Length: 337
Image (cartoon, one colour):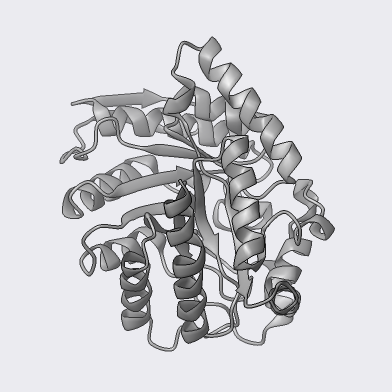
């Protein structure tokens, strides 16, 4: 089982207080180096471009959203081993030619450590703000076009694409990434996301789901991959969870329930995930409780507890949580395996 953590690139106002990063230039490096030291496989960043309505209503000042690929490039220069992923980048708000150029450059500069996790984005209101001319359009259709376009740009010498939403002609996008194939992880927790992962991905990157439902979706993923002629194990199952670890289960629950993550879960209830189920279906509790959940997830077919989000109020508290989880869960899970 792999474990990785999510840098607070775009979580201010959502799960963290606005202004939590007092010194982002150094805070991101401290966090990434800590992740590397405590045995995490990778560091990831999420992607938002503008403030969500409920966040604007809650805070007097707008949140700082740090562009994810720029931030990952910054921490790449300060680390040696950890891979660098997006969980998730939102292609419907971006130009695929620019994304391909950025990802390939990061992969080369990091000696082949970049992963692109791609999804439609959590908040439609954000898409409609930054792509106002495309209001009402299908973000799923845009995502599928973008994935096809990115594959061409990352792999072919000269790429031409004429879709409904994206168009380019005879683009030579060099340098190419060092990794072949370049890893694309497909975000989303519905059937359409799994089907996209089977068609295009090296990984499936869903948000949290009730554990029993997650097991069923993993079985579906494996069946569809085999039917498509792919090795089912070639698609990494990498769900994202939130984490609060405590010396006791009760301490962890209290800390989670007092965090901004609870309101964030409520804001996403429209996606079909019941916020009331989040406590029991994320990695919240004592080390012993979490290790039991991790063992269950591994048996269900999870390969990677990915882009783990630790709702805290300060960078120092986040580092403490990462270290405790690394020493009490990551190291012990590796020993048990």
